[in-house]
Amino acid sequence: MKLIIGLLLFAVSLHASAVNETHPQYVGAIAINACQDPRILADWYSKIGIETHEVSGGFYGTFNTPAGPFFFGIHPKRKDAPKTSSASVSVVFRVDDYDRYISEVGKRGLTPISVEQDSEGRFAHFKDPDGNEVTLWGK
Image (cartoon, one colour):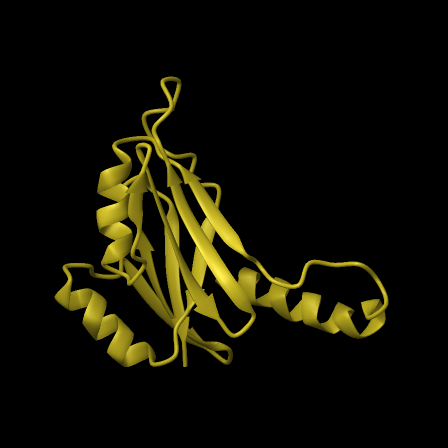
């Protein structure tokens, strides 16, 4: 996690020198190619507060952030999908009230596999049913 935060801080420091360069405004979406039944993933992500709706075998949702809308998708399982995820991507969701959020997801049956704290905040790490790393980050 410290590597991720270090990269974020590095990116912020570059911002001052790159004001006139073309760059993305914010992350607008995450799409997961499911390794198993996408409904299992949709149910798991609903426990951390991401509600989706089934459309043509996939599950899709959106919510607003201060930066703009955020879209979340779990695509239908492909016939050639691997049995498990490569777990090469880590998804980090920023939360307002860390203690309340962790308490709420605990009531929904999720327990972090590890937690840590540093000068940037507190982090609760999970793995979704496909093995993807998911972190909740707050103060």
